[in-house]
Image 1 (cartoon, rainbow, N blue to C red):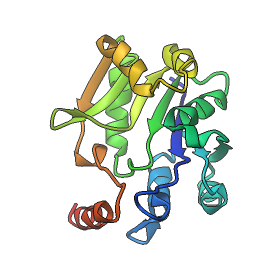
Image 2 (cartoon, rainbow, N blue to C red):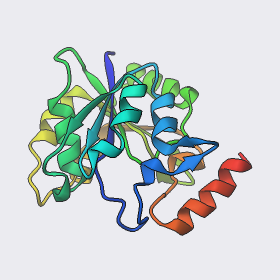
Image 3 (spheres, one colour):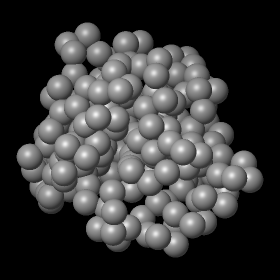
Image 4 (tube, rainbow, N blue to C red):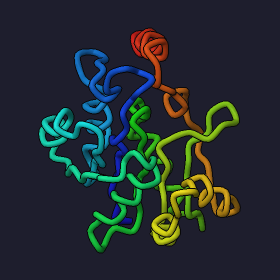
Length: 194
């Protein structure tokens, strides 16, 4: 598998009041944690709102920034921007949300083994009976994601292929929400006690 990670980093973090990717845990930004976890992969970071704020972090990790001018139309347009920027030989991508920063290499290894050893087109972590992130996506679905209209979501593609969706055990970090200042305070405590 030739894998690239696509990190969706275009949103306004409006409920947080500040860019959630610039919040700090252990002296590192959330984006630092994400990109450090993806250091073994070619990584595309899709920017949108105030891209200049996160560009230095992206460059420091050797990742590639790709700007989505349509970021206000939603997350789907950012994933589509990332897919269009892929090298031609990439056949699998990690879809990584800006909340998803606590995943381990062990989890990614398990996801890749699951995809390689089954007919899965999607592999997700599962925690407490709920799907988490990141999601591993096979190239057979790239065109389907790219064909989504503004009134459709990525979830529509996922639901159409539920019979080709495999799961591996995840932990709470695959289900973390980091949308509000209250979420951040809770996450800081969880991180300190992990």
